[in-house]
Image 1 (cartoon, one colour):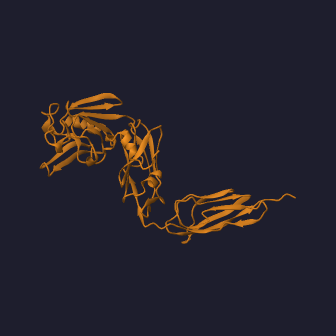
Image 2 (tube, helix red, strand yellow; image 1 turned 30 degrees about the vertical axis):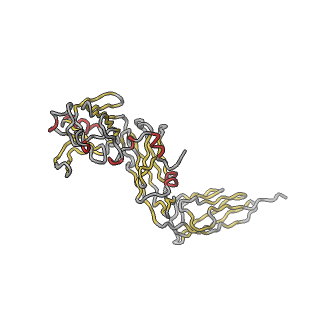
Image 3 (cartoon, rainbow, N blue to C red; image 1 turned 45 degrees about the vertical axis):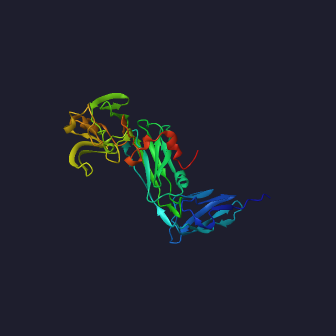
Amino acid sequence: MENKAKAALTVTPAEGEGVSPAGPFQVAVTGGSLTSVALTGSDGTVVKGNLAADGWVATEDLGYDKVYTWSGAAKGQDGADVPVTGSFRTLKPQRLTSASANVGDHQTYGIAMPIKITFSSPVQDKASVQKAMTVKTSVPTEGAWAWLSDTEAHWRPREYFKPNTEVSVDVNVYGVPFGGGAYGAEDVHVQFKIADRALVAKANTQTHRFEIYRDGVLLHDFPASYGAEYDQRRITRSGIHVVTGKWASRPMRSTVFNYDVNVTWAVQISGDGEFVHENNGTISSQGKENVSHGCANLSGTNAEVFYKLSIAGDPVEVVGSSIPLGPPNGDYYDWAIDWADWTAKSAVKS
């Protein structure tokens, strides 16, 4: 007479304290099949999951610092029922750290758009957090994470994105240790797209020109005036800037240089106040000399052209000035960092 197998269960986790609420939480069976499984919190909430004959897997995260209990049964090939049992408690964080992304869901950006993840408090265990963050692209794209501060991790491609690239960002940090007793408060998921054209502006502070290229073809070559070179505070920084926003009309104020004016067709290209904008008051200098406080001055007509063509993420490649773009200039100086130095800022060494 053939001996039929008894059901053997593997419950993960069957018991324990300090369990990560991100899982995995699952039940597997050999020598039989599952007939029912439930994972229930101490407040009576039943965790969602998928049940199959050979196993059960939770399809949602659990809460922090909660007790969960297994129940259910499997029927062996011998016809005997074997109960699903066990109980465990999830970990209790000393504090929670949240994450946010600079890119918006289902938005479209230019080919130079970096991805910036900002954390609500300094991250001690950067490697742990970085391993939980992924970027996927619809076309092969070499890229890397770099920590530009204790609260900011940036990802950018080695070269500009290809037009029409679809990008998915997954920051799966819920339940992940941040160091110092901190854990991730929630996951962040964003999907965005790169525009269907490669728009690149080339700003030369020595020839006093502002050129606009689309897909490698020169569309416009405008005279411009950049930051006056006799004052280091006014020098337009060299390096690849990134468009971050634009306004049809915007006030420009400075207590340092004592001005308060309104300009039109203002396109911001750095975090410390560099713009490409209209300034009809400097038309006589445009194409000849640099007289601005750091912005790229164009005529109203020409500034409107760039304003209408540009979107967030478009690169503005500034050359010719004596001071490079860098950390003091804020978002985004990512492209001013060469690739070797960029990858050296990763917390996970390949």
